[in-house]
Amino acid sequence: MSYQPIPTIDWWAIAPVSIVMVTGIVALLIEMFRPNRNNNTIVAVSLVGLFLAGLSVVPQFSMPFGSSFGGMVVRDYLGLVLQLLLITVCFVAFLFSEPYLREKRIAFAEFYQLALWASAGGMIMVTTENLLMFFLGLEVLGIALYCLTGMCRQELRSEESAMKYFLLGAFGTAFVLMGIAYLYGPTGSLRIDAVSIAVASDQPHFVLMALFGFGLLLVGLCFKSALVPFHQWTPDVYQGAPTNVTAFMASTSKIAAIGALIRVLAAGAPLVSYWFPIMFWVAILSMVVGNFAALVQKDVKRTLGYSSVANGGYMLVAVLAHVQAPEKVSLASTLFFITGYGVMTMGAFAVVSLAARDGKEGTRFQDLHGLWHRAPFAAGCLILFVASLIGVPPTVGFFGKMFIFNDALAAGLLPLALVLAVTSVVSAYYYLGIIQAVFVQEEGAVKNESGRPQAGLNLAVLLCALAIFGISLGAENVLKFMAPAEDGRQPVAERTVAQR
Amino acid sequence: MGTDIPLVWYLVTALFMFVMGGIGVVVRRNPVVVFMCIELMLNATNLTFLAFARYQIASAQTPEAALQAAMSGQMMVIFVMAVAAAEVAVGLGIIMAIFRLKNEAGLDDMSTMRG
View 1: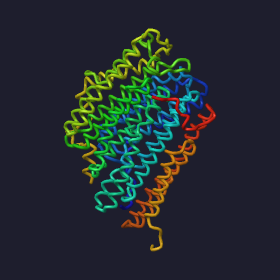
View 2 (view 1 turned 90 degrees about the horizontal axis):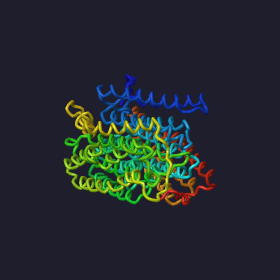
View 3 (view 1 turned 30 degrees about the vertical axis):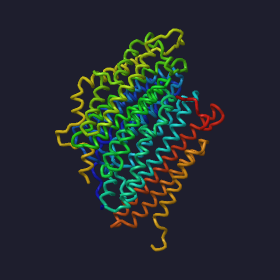
């Protein structure tokens, strides 16, 4: 490789990330100049910034795809859809955060800046094929989330969960880094396709190093995307973090980690015979352990934490189907399911956040008793979110699971499809438990006062509910949008193979 | 070149550090010590990156390719150090917050949440 003149800069490719980052900085400055005031200005500025970032993503769908900045930023359907989704999730989280933070007496403006930067980190993760950028995105996301998890400083469980998240997150980072080092070693390249270069070199010790590095990278990524057997932190962190942070984290970190996992697995195609059986079992274990452990939980947030582990398993099934048969199975159903997951998780946690009142918050099932009377609209929408999480037909959750089921069959992964179907049925039990807690007022149950829903929360819940129906009504079109096969743009796995 | 230390020695040392750090994370009960073990693991990766970067210089075809390949690894080390510093700041902050709440921060006592 020789020295090249500085290429023209593709400003559009970095516009969404830059806008979100700068919005965070602006929000920080506002907070400096307006101490001890309410956060309304900051919320408004953040929402406008996120809206602009979303606007800057949309025209890129019709721009030429490919990588810029020496492969550090890549523009493709996977990246654009996930970026748009990350922005939307952050937007919805901000809508219902302010009333919750006030009820909880932790109305720090820092929530908004850190959440914006975490989003930017996630957006970097899903739009890069460079391992250095991937690592930086991962850490920007991770470090911001450690702070957010421990935001409720008067509550011991918030700090404990921050501690656990931090230690295990940093532990996972060490694995990711060692993996990157051993991919870099034989090839001298930090590009994600270093695996293919190492395998193509035909030197056995290079292949061995790449295998070792790739394995460590996968371990680290499984930590981050909370897949069994690296999921132990998930329920604790979901339970301990403030509920709006849990909502944000459950969606953002899952979306970003699965997006990165898609790229890494696609790049690992030359070694597929080694890692496929392992990831196959990781997917099965995630679905089984996540769903069965959720059955015995007494805390709504913990239950949803295990449910998130199980949903990670479903997503992994879709990714594996794509990697197994890229010519038959596109990434569309993966993206469809992730979108649905983001929307329904946000909605469910938004309703659960109503349990906060006067600086206290109970999140056990009985703490939700009688929510129906105090917040009929939010409670009604919770039915919808839970129905979607179970996979009841007209909702987005049903279509997502159905598409993944079909994909798994098309790719010849019958066991995965069966486990998905069976564990989904099991999951109905604990999801219905949440509904029951909200609607049934048991005799002699503890009476709980929970917060009144505010306009922001109602709006957030309404948006999620509309999205659940909107996406599922237009399922065919959404699917087509997410995998436009006919215009010659190759899916990620095929493109990586073609580059070799 | 004959008297140089071979690449493998660096890799073995780094892996030893990495495994020691990993064992420490699992075995030790004090969050500060656990955190030190994680730092040890990160330093092991830095050593690996630097050894590989030096090896790229020795094995590349042209000086330019050598420069480019070696620089990637060395740049990575700088970023890892910066990120590790940020992690230290956040981690110690969280440990401080726990101390303030209950005057001790052993990992065995962190059992508020169960299920």
